[in-house]
Image 1 (cartoon, one colour):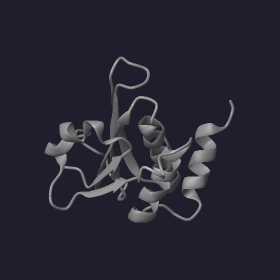
Image 2: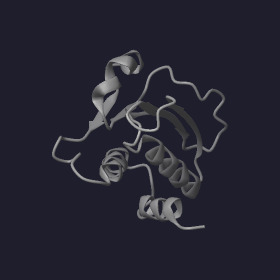
Image 3: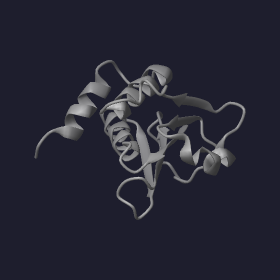
Image 4: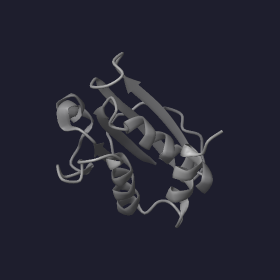
Length: 136
């Protein structure tokens, strides 16, 4: 079981990363839960989500977070809020200021996470991105 906390500000792409990870889980046959949290602001307010992944395809009985295995930090403005979910084994994945310049830095974060976890079959993240952004 993997517990992932993605944190950022509204407009950073935390929800988008979470949704793409959920699609990738479905493509790989994993059970997963997605719990979004965001303030009432469209941009600039807190935006985070919790994802739990069970690679054994069992039911996830409790989607809430006790301690995170991974922190994906798009914006560290709310990091102090989520410190209680960190323990000594929590892996923090963050971008440098240079990597955050321009559009699409959330997809860069997603790829860093996928490389770190090595959980998804080759090509799954690209396929999940394509599914997420295809026009319907």
